Length: 215
Image 1: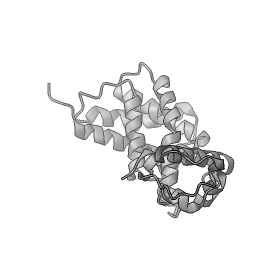
Image 2 (image 1 turned 45 degrees about the vertical axis):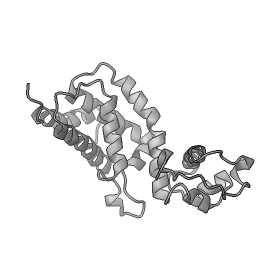
Image 3 (image 1 turned 90 degrees about the horizontal axis):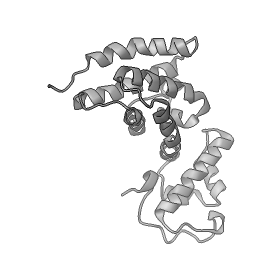
């Protein structure tokens, strides 16, 4: 059973009282939150090529302590990325406020996400596979956290998705993720206007053709 950020529940009372900066967490939730916060701090200082040992040193705990909550570095990074991108999702909602046309909102949401990538390593973490993968395979749309990102983008839009069938909504999530994947792997030349034109060429016709509920 898991808890906040993928942390394992059943607080480990045997965790040594030393470490944690002299203040042992009172619960699993607090421990997981402090691990995620330390991971963000470590990424901000050193980049995303970090290890559990790096995070453990930041917290003054052992790697085994972090393994109680996160099974691997990749799991920890994915949980940290989900936690860290919440602020961006709020920014997305503000930036797209009032845009109710599905295609227009998706185009702008995708473009804002792509423009944010160079300044936000956490979005990239959500879209990639294990760090052991080959470079050409590092961006994926199949992991669960990538799907969470795609669905979060949809949920932040001021669009009424109810006319679309459930299958169409799933297709839209895939369209969002695969468009992000394509442009991350092969960034377009040109500026913001050209990016929106290219994304529009893809998104507009596809959204118009998606099935909708009868009536």
